[in-house]
Amino acid sequence: MAGSPSRAAGRRLQLPLLCLFLQGATAVLFAVFVRYNHKTDAALWHRGNHSNADNEFYFRYPSFQDVHAMVFVGFGFLMVFLQRYGFSSVGFTFLLAAFALQWSTLVQGFLHSFHSGHIHVGVESMINADFCVGAVLISSGALLGKTGPAQLLLMALLEVVLFGINEFVLLHLLGVRVWGGMEWGVGGGQGQPLSQEHGGGGGVLPLHLTAPPQVRDAGGSMTIHTFGAYFGLVLSRVLYRPQLEKSKHRQGSVYHSDLFAMIGTIFLWIFWPSFNSALTALGTGQHQTALNTYYSLAASTLSTFALSALVGEDGRLDMVHIQNAALAGGVVVGTSSEMMLTPFGALAAGFLAGTVSTLGLERVFPLIAEGQRSATSQAMYQLFGLFVTLMFASVGGGLGAGLLLKLPFLDSPLDSQCYEDQVHWQVPGEHEDEAQRPLRVEEADTQA
Image 1: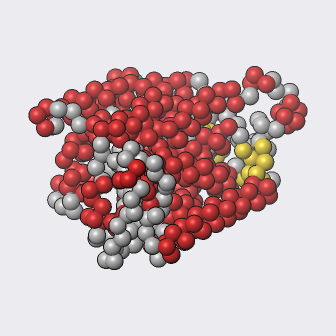
Image 2: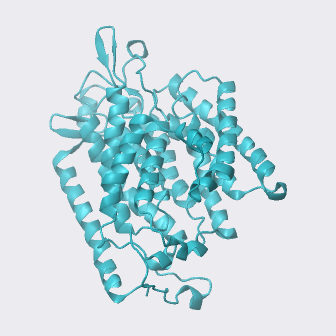
Image 3: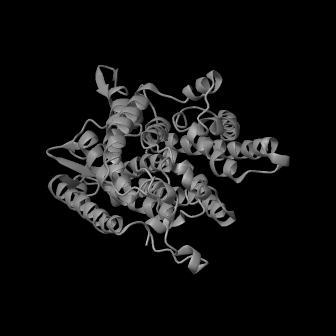
């Protein structure tokens, strides 16, 4: 048993009560507010003399499947690189995603598809919810091994709300343009033109009637990746504990943990074109987005391998570079992928992204990790910031979620027990006596 009896007793009640409360509250809100949209409700769909073959489900659901696999398999396995934290990486990803997709359906629904007193959901709602889950999982990566499941659920509770508000400001308030005497907005939360009709949850206007908004973010480079990264970074800083060095010996990876993390990278890499194109306009817009992402990822992979060997010790490749920088091509074209980037432009963007990411992992990240900062490194880091997103992520992550997660009764692991599965899981282990021996408890530990 890990820790004192009182901590074990608190752990036995804390997570079950929180899960039951959140699920119960969500279920009540679903019962009161959530309804099928006109594309999902059979009576409404056939009343409009629509054919089943015309239903958007058949065009969007394959993309949803890909995005869903990225969230649960890609992000889950990408985080199993820690040698003693594989159960928690995959298990807590599963838990967070299952809650966040329900909560984000409500939050995004109130902001984007609330009319006639109800939230109207369909296949686009599922995709948007998974996008929000992606931001939450990116943030959780900054807290990997240092928080308990109850703290992560509370983080998701707050972050989903801030994500929805930030997305609404960027893509609806900043993304509204007066065109031909009419107001146009961005629907679906990810660059989808709104329909003038409000009775069916929003449809796609004909191409000749639509106008591009001022803010485009098909793949969520601003709303998902940047927001999630900054939220997690600020939250990690607020929860910083000076004695985490006691668990430093568990922060490294081993051969099999890096191998499993590479599975996550491959899943993300394969499905990233679907992620960026899932909610873009059907037809040429979606086709363009998938092609641009496809080529950008390929170029970023080659540049990552090249730079990893170039800067690596004795010319050898570093698996950390491959696991992370090879995905930079998908992120870098997230905002511009549905534009006329051209195949060459996508290759160039991906190659540059892989190069910069590899150099950042090799040179800049160690400076940040060690607390060093120069004028040059600070200037380079600031280039990644977007003012509105940074404001929401920093204020929300620091003053909101950070202070909440520091409450003493929440079950954060002790300093000497971080990055360890045995704190929250029954671990069988390859060597039973070593895996199940009691963890050391130290009086001088601090808690987040």
